[in-house]
Image (cartoon, rainbow, N blue to C red):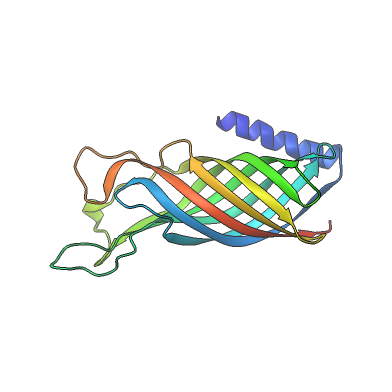
Length: 204
């Protein structure tokens, strides 16, 4: 799968640089995340999405692109207070550098459908409860590589301004469940994310 992503990325770059006109710009927005496999539900963990993109037209209705983004993901229990010494607060903070590659299909002059894959490298991963960061003996490492499939829509508002709405899900576990029973951990864990970003096109 990694080889497929790299080959697709190089194909896009070669096509953009040597065959057709390419465009690009900056990206900024917000993520709403949860982690499937913990004991909580709901997209309660907010995060930022920051980076840039480049893309090129393959035909009048199809385009291909890639992005490089800082993506904040994770999980959060919305209860924040301990009752009768019971630990209720739980926050998982994951910071990734993501490299999405995608195909876009224009369904109208202003709306496009996006499908793609995103490989991510974990910069940092921390967990917190009511008393701060989990103690060293309770920490379990996350996998450094994340691979997500995503589906989304892009809306064009002006010549330069676009808005993307996407849903993404990990194809591989971000962490395997250990043998011992943990109060915040049910099974292998997967990133599950909704993202809304604004793209501003720049001239090259």
